Image 1: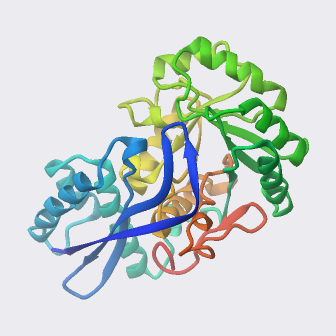
Image 2: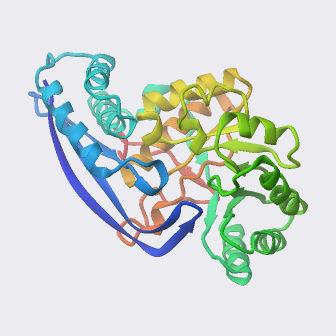
Length: 344
């Protein structure tokens, strides 16, 4: 019967981030701790982002409050899957379930004295390739950020599009990084029709893009766009739709800890996406350290045995003034924490 504690946290970004869904200046998170009668504990994090996923923090807080009562009534030796299922039966809200799932995995790792990745896959990768996200909205600024990312060893950079001067900024980025660095774009569903999305992708294609994330929302729209797109497609927000990850509608699927309900949900959806022929990778919605750490462990498990994994969008903690050195990339990759639990 673990006891649940919840603490709200606000993290200020060093600079505002603008995307098609709006502008982000501050990140509101809910940190959770599960403590068992023997004193052992596990930490997790709920990271809803209402402008992006439509889920208010207050709704997640209410779900966590309900989970607290469920967990108090559970047997002290109840297994991970049973505790998670009991919470889901009370309220099936992925952003809240993710916090519980992370805390359960963190507790399991601490108890075993091993990193979570090692519990997920004995031959998990020791590091995870990541992309640099470029936030500048002008050509010169984007080129400067891209050049800095290349110098830092990143093999992939991501440019937000659907926010103005897309073709100019993307071309400037390609010129700055040269031909060997992958360039991907993220539209966050900015384009409303298949025809509009296709036209924009044709304008961006000369930059030799690796892929375009969520150019349009919806499984069938993405499937139709894929048939005419000059650029490989990845679904992001659309992956929240039931069965979307397993649809095979896009070349790749971007998975997120909060949206999938935690590490357990990410691995489930990754298996379904791969079975449908899609590559998978993980990204952060500017999560806190626990959320990013969870994604790194999950990505390492998905890359077990040397399986190739596209660069993950997890190099985001440096955007916060409070966490510039946590899970910091080196040479375009983040090392999997080697200590027990999520953060070691």
